Image (cartoon, rainbow, N blue to C red):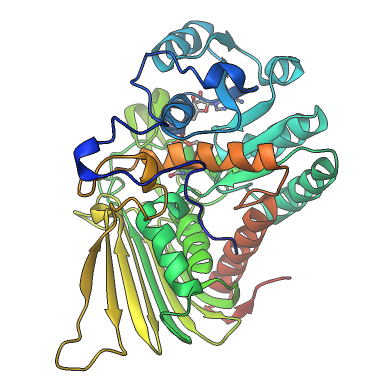
Length: 426
Ligand SMILES: NC(=O)c1ccc[n+]([C@@H]2O[C@H](COP(=O)([O-])OP(=O)(O)OC[C@H]3O[C@@H](n4cnc5c(N)ncnc54)[C@H](O)[C@@H]3O)[C@@H](O)[C@H]2O)c1
């Protein structure tokens, strides 16, 4: 698995420069002299709610912070409601709006299609976009089934031979602290890996009256907490470990099986309910253990019923020589224990991941001036632009997304069979 990269053309900057003197930086809204000479990368994005807003920020900002080989242009935004999509385009800085994703893909002034819709449309849109010669960025999980993900991966491979690239949006790889953790594992600082312990805890479904939004319907979302949160932690665990899972043993549960129907469109994790109820057809929580190919053991917990936990993605890796721990709710920090130090002085220490030689940070603020959730989408855009310009497969690729999909399928199969250990299909 590839290493995170420093920003291209970056130079170290002293604390007194306060970031503003960086040759790569331009104030928001000011002209970008270098950008004018670079070829544009014209983006068409489908979906404009939660991830649409986050990706818009990524595309808007990446070329203003990092020295990119191509300049992202927010060319067209697509939604189904003409008035709402026009308003969203104005709010997020898109030059034009479309109400049919097929029309967006047919435009010859679009180079890249960014898919920010629920999982039931990922495969159809991605296959059409690749067939039309576009690069593709697709939100996670890659698809709703292994079969869809296989078709998307085959199409991505064919398209790659024609110079197109396809990436899946596992943005948590792009927190500087997780990227640093990956480098430390790859450098061998943990030695042989023994345990990976991961949880992703939210609580927005604790309220039984929360409406039956698309995330609770299998035909739209594919699965529940498993595909929503579990996909992230499976990808992150495998990325940090540098190896795939070999098999899993799982439990899943749906705690509230009937919910009020929503009124109008939902956005992200919020919605309003009206009359009537409907069936919840996905898991509310998924717990599973796993074995990596090296023999290291892993445990996973994904739930939207962890009362009081808002977005608690936590991962700890224990190796023969040391341990690393990360908590998304404290995302500028990485905890590291060097097991080779004398016992009297040893212990977990906090690395404040804000130094210019930490991943991505050479282009941001002076040390100690932390980043947030939204920066992962800026880094995602940055990395994808580099992959396109350099003609290499971006990571995570559609093949990586397919492999995660196979893990999710094995979790569901195991849960259906009384937690029997289920190998991950190759
Ligand atoms: N990377 C992350 O951290 C992260 C976080 C949340 C969601 N996601 C993923 O992003 C995707 C979208 O989730 P979200 O939270 O943004 O959902 P959302 O409900 O907030 O937004 C979905 C958008 O898609 C639009 N849409 C749906 N079907 C469409 C169609 N056929 N044509 C055009 N537009 C269509 C909706 O109108 C809406 O604008 C999902 O795959 C989800 O799993 C990823």
